[in-house]
Image (cartoon, rainbow over all chains, first blue to last red; front, side):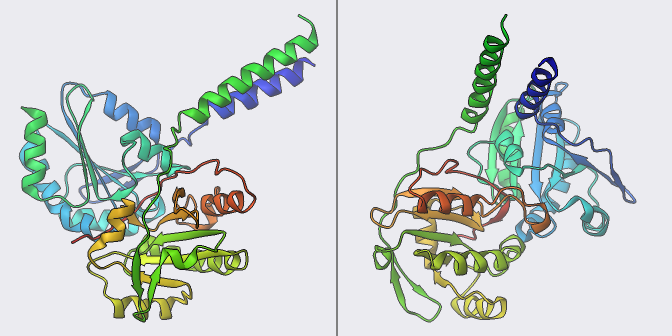
Length: 171
Length: 195
């Protein structure tokens, strides 16, 4: 009887707190390495602001508007990197990191942190970033220095729009 | 505590946490859409009212150039073939301003898509549905065009990783006269190229 109850408790705990895979894979590039990211890790990044606002861009190498927008993110990181943390999260398949993501980043000369998403359920990740977001990419989210989301921009943005949004959050 | 009472208590606690887990997914009450008329790639008009006798109407916003939408070509065709015999109408809609009618026709032929594909010039219908990306599915009731389901076809672009066939589940529930248990789901896709 006791063992039956323990089994039930384990099943319950598993349903309430689904276990995320432990990910430590790093895909090294010349100037850039890519680490896999989970929902838990994303939450930690948002929470651990250390006084710096955060810009998160969700993109993929297969997404043409993302590729078109990317040079502006590189430029923004170069210009605002001292007062804003910029990170990119690719939703390519993790196993495509070496073949697709790293070459693209090197071509773009991207110096900011890039992750590749590896989650069993994309919906959890989408809802964590914004419940109003349907999952279309590119998408950009700007958090203030306390980790509160102040801007969400869906679709490809102009450089001016991105800069104006950053200015509103960092002023 | 007696074993019986202990089991009941355990069941109540389990049920409570499972219930809490389900309400955090805050399902949005589906709305309805108006009738619309669009041309298919052979310039034949189709209205929603043409399908009033169907058991349900599936609408999927699709694209010719989106790799995610293209990853679902075979799965969409399979769903169409399976569910048309169950009285379900199946319509693809292309709302991308960058993808013209000739390209859509050629793409359908090349990829073996035999279901009706409509061209949404000016993304009027995409705006009406508030559709944001491809592939994005809707299931409508055929009598009042109420949105019974909105979201993904399944939960992985990679067929070997699928663990939830959400559109199929919703259709089966509707055909069995049940309320759709999970009426709103999400997945990554290509944003619709609007005018």
